[in-house]
Length: 161
Image (cartoon, rainbow, N blue to C red; front, side, top):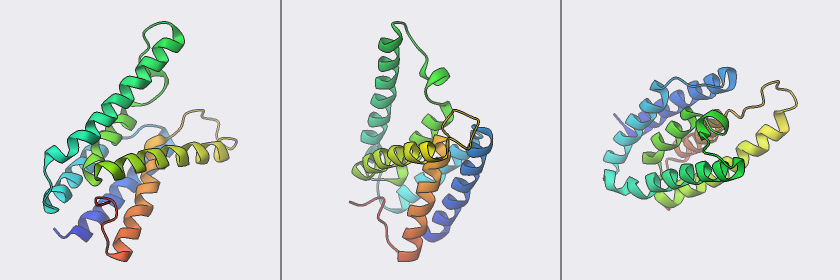
């Protein structure tokens, strides 16, 4: 499969994630898993290895651990962040998109994506009765924009710094 076709497939999967997360505030487990599979194929085609993903995976692990510690200290008891702060689909999404980025670009995507998600939610939360943030959906939209730019410009801005 060509790289462009794989990127188009990613855009389709991301569009499904966006719609499901925005409408139902949950995503089907097969969607992020399929993102991971396509991402792994792209990773292998670029000549990189699974070991190149370890720093990003460590970053996500430390971030989730930090969230758990923050919430537990704040509430003065052990708190499960999956029940109060972030969905399992969001964490699975963060893990499964790791093959799509170099480590530095993953950090950029993570920070910019969270800031954009917060901004979008603040702007549109008045229209919604639901108080939760469709994080995977918002981040999917951001990735769709980035991959559309890559396809149009025939570049690979996400993996290489």
